[in-house]
Amino acid sequence: MKILITGGAGFIGSHLAEYLLDQNHEVIVVDNLSTGSIENIAHLTEYDNFEFYEGSILNYKLMLRLVTSCECIYHLAAAVGVKYVVEHPLDSLIVNVRGTEIVLDLANVFRKKVFLASSSEVYGKNGTRPFQENDDRILGSIAVSRWGYSCSKAFDEFLAAAYYKSSKLDVVIGRLFNVCGPKQKGIYGMVIPRFIQQALNNQPITVYGEGTQIRSFTYITDAITAIEKLMSDSQAKGEVFNIGSPESISIMELAEKIKELCQSDSEIITVPYEEVYEGDFEDMLYRLPDISKLKAVTGFNPEVSLEEMLKKITKEYTE
Ligand code: UDP
Image (cartoon, rainbow, N blue to C red; front, side, top):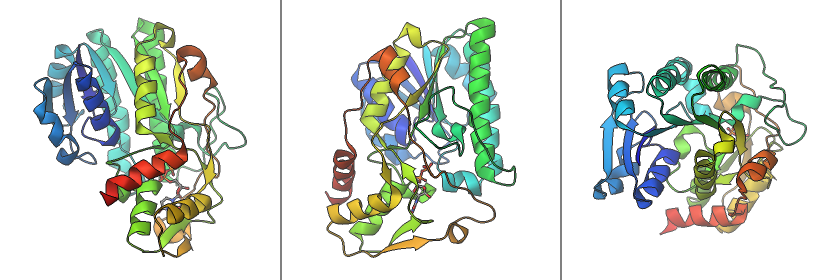
């Protein structure tokens, strides 16, 4: 099959591209390299079935050409990383809203199946129990850029759901929960590569806030398995699914675990959010997925434990 991946030079997109190429698909990647990189896809040029276009999903003409030439689309192009999003609010909103409008509009006109990558950010700060797909979304003030990002991803979901309802566009939505793995960069804020690099360099491990915030992490191979299962299951059509792992940890415990694993002499320090983010910032104190819907429809079960993923990622830096 000929597959288009938007954002295919990013962390998740480049792993997905490699997986699909290994399954003997033809893969076209479009990426503007804002947070993705040529490095991520350099090894893919060895495959005959791989094509790369450096360009933006906001470029309608380019997207028209690419969408018409493929059979299905994995739409991953979006602003990523809390740090990036907070520092680039306008670009983030435009790419998430206008870019997704272009992708879904073209997919609808040319009847191409779409996977829409959404985010656990849509739930906002509602945090009392693992999130179920239809839970309320609780957001804060519009002065906080993070909530704008949350709204933009929610808008993408509304749009996809509306295309499904009004014109039966074959689309499935996955809400990704803190995906991690090799090639993920710490510069956009992601905690695991940051902590591992700090620990390996014996630099202070910077826990933001009190470190009591709870997260669960999804290893890249599990995320790809879930995405693939959703794309190949007709029952998933028009639906939204959490993609994640129920194993949870506080950020302070994560820092301690990584320090121990890296046999590091780093000091673990707490850093007030005001010192990291300009202006108003809010963190989610609790974010865990309920993946029973994903399990029930696709039989998915995450395979990689937190311990294993930390070991695999650390290996990338030490080899
Ligand atoms: N975090 C941290 N130190 C860092 C980077 C992140 O304590 O150097 C915290 C961050 O405030 C959040 C959690 O780790 O509570 C996960 O951050 P990340 O940006 O990876 O993902 P998020 O869950 O915020 O989208």
